[in-house]
Amino acid sequence: MASLFQRFLAWLTGRSGSVVIPPASQPAASPAEKPTTTPEPTPSGSEQMQLARKSSSADAATGKLSFGGVSATTEESAKRLAAGSYTLELREEGGLHSAYWFRFPDHHKGMIVIKDPTFDGFRYLRLGESAADTQGGIVIPNIGEYLDIYTRVADAISTGKHVSLVVS
Image (cartoon, rainbow, N blue to C red; front, side, top):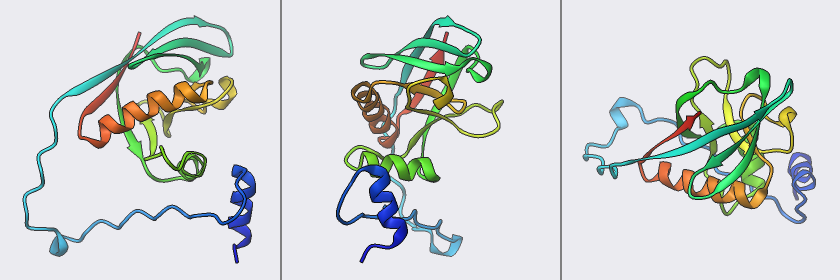
């Protein structure tokens, strides 16, 4: 029988039937438990995603995100990213990660985090409709475009490539 929490998550994500809880991250190995084999080399290379701003108002900044395709974006004007280059990483913790894992179980590998040392918190590349949805990150309003960009970025990061976001 599903717990109350599992039933709530099923209702929240629009799924009926049983709910599968994502596996918890494995704890880091202690120094004594570290494998003695040499890790496999990661593929070299890097990839760049481009964000070109189109317009800005008191509430929102809009732009075009290019990474193997083009997508419209929205940012909160007060918290938007400064022009420059940012590293992208995958984060496999937190409530947003769990929500996206339940919504996109065949695609989701972790939330795409835009590493910004000047921001207190996490800036995510995520789905959303308005500047209020950004929470300091960048939102893409179209699910198909989001999944296309997400899959390309997550696959590149998973294969050891350095992926960056260049904001102009």
